[in-house]
Length: 231
Figure 1 (cartoon, rainbow, N blue to C red):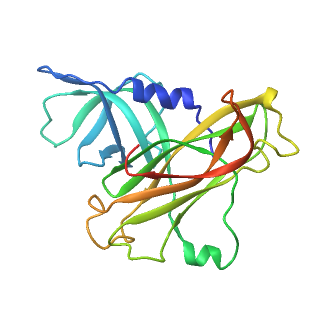
Figure 2 (figure 1 turned 180 degrees about the vertical axis):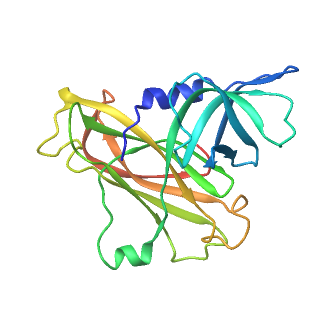
């Protein structure tokens, strides 16, 4: 999975304030999918890029979180034009059922951190942080597990699994001096899992988190953490 530095991810959050005048909405933050070159947000708006300050063609991505200025008013085709300021790719991860996973193996306990968590449309979106080695070749992978041992219409309980390929504190190949923090965004589709309105069903996220010493530095081992709702 492509690594995206948390510094770039944090920049999106810091620039999320917006204001309106006769022509623009400035600094809007939107998540959505691309469909034939049109960015369709999770709340149903449709954007085309008039100005691209990133100088990167992001129309080939399936899903992204973007920061943009929106030109107004809406044109006759029902599509808004935007100035794209920044973006981060969001990997769509189809969830696995806990009963099927545990029938074959135990949960992975490779640690990670949850930096953001929010729901939009038919997705639960996750911002993840994890430690890597500078110049390393390890492939970090993530699974999302849905707890199907209870009624899914009442609540959604998901677990994030991290497969660090040996890049975690305490492993034989890990060196703190040569380590850095990386991150990525995941989007978990809820359509087909929850029979009712997914935006009204409460959710909880569980993961194996890093343990920290008294100085705030990651240390060997992990601890289970739970997060309820948006973060």
